[in-house]
Amino acid sequence: MTQPSDGQAPGSAAPAVLTLTTQELFDGRQEIILLHNGSPYRLRITRQNKLILTK
Image (tube, rainbow, N blue to C red; front, top):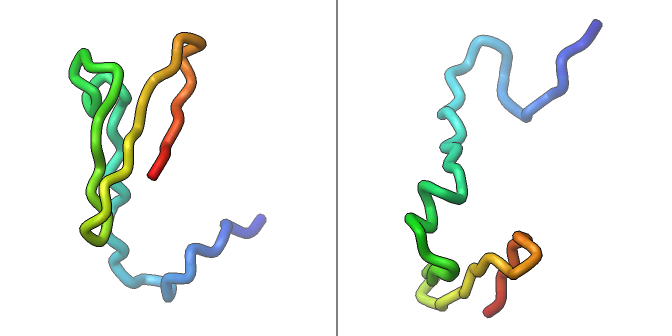
């Protein structure tokens, strides 16, 4: 059985992927602003408990 390739050479140390819950990220808020390359992006939780990201 083969393992999925993540593009890393066997035996190389890959940085761990940061995993956050929406509870940790939003901290009780319904909306947050993320800055990416100097541009603001709005991430919000809808009434149906879905995530929407807009520029």
